[in-house]
Image (tube, rainbow, N blue to C red; front, side, top):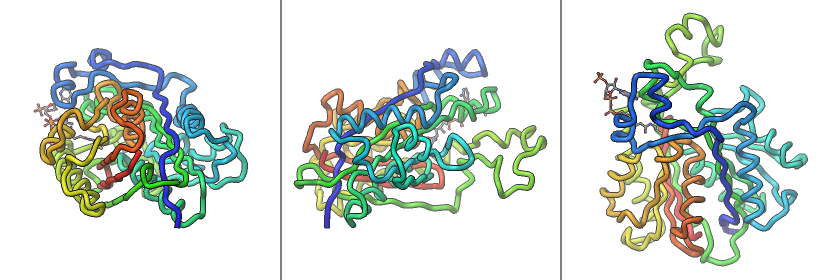
Length: 332
Ligand SMILES: CC(C)(COP(=O)(O)OP(=O)(O)OC[C@H]1O[C@@H](n2cnc3c(N)ncnc32)[C@H](O)[C@@H]1OP(=O)(O)O)[C@@H](O)C(=O)NCCC(=O)NCCS
């Protein structure tokens, strides 16, 4: 059986910088409110012509270059998003086309903010079985075109940003650079506490003026419930991974990269499991919550800053709508 590793990583964020003060011109909010509760200072929104696929393609090209492989070495694309460019087909085929690749399979997955961890678990399993050798895994999101930019949507709209992250997952050749474990979970009992209800095939017609008048085509969230879920599930997922890998103390872990949903959530989780500030990295201040893209974007930055070095023991952890949550432990 083969084992898998991250061979290369890339990122690309949307080009328009939108500050909290910019949002305050569109809706009743303030930099102080947003910053105090979430840590967010600015986020990126797409400019005309930028799409999930275009950002993903740029992130993929960087990941391919860093992996030292040719695009034609890729034999599967996995694309995690809650905001596909079109209703169908999935967005991975557009990235395939942009990269000039032909006939390799393209797999689109959802799983919202846990999408990247779910994607890692799929890629790892495919590498282990030998089905594929070099997998391009992407997390890419465009939220800005689907947010309610009036006061009615302010609780959700201030949180999210647009961006993409990508990794090449290939075969490990030693145990110093290897994905050690992935653990993924879901609980649909409260699926509606964070969702976008319209347009949807569950409704006929899929969208109506009445639904739009009620603003049901915009995401809605019970922030307090989601917050509580996050600070419960993320520590659980970390402990589960530690146990599976025989890691007795969090002190053995070099770096924890949490999904970037809210700085306060991540600070609380770090405190709960005893992670000191120098052993975790956050960049939600600059990018907001980019959902499936947040972990590879944050990991990319931590590598650039020298906070993650080759061979380091790294824990990735996420939670999100669904509800979904999970972790991945790896030696980078
Ligand atoms: C969204 C979140 C920051 C809101 O913080 P909160 O302390 O729970 O705030 P509340 O929702 O109780 O709202 C408090 C007040 O602020 C108001 N408010 C909401 N959004 C606001 C905004 N952007 N600007 C100003 N005021 C706002 C509310 O209307 C409410 O006013 P009221 O007391 O007059 O009714 C917080 O719940 C959170 O981060 N939850 C997790 C969200 C998340 O991570 N989602 C992604 C999951 S992957």
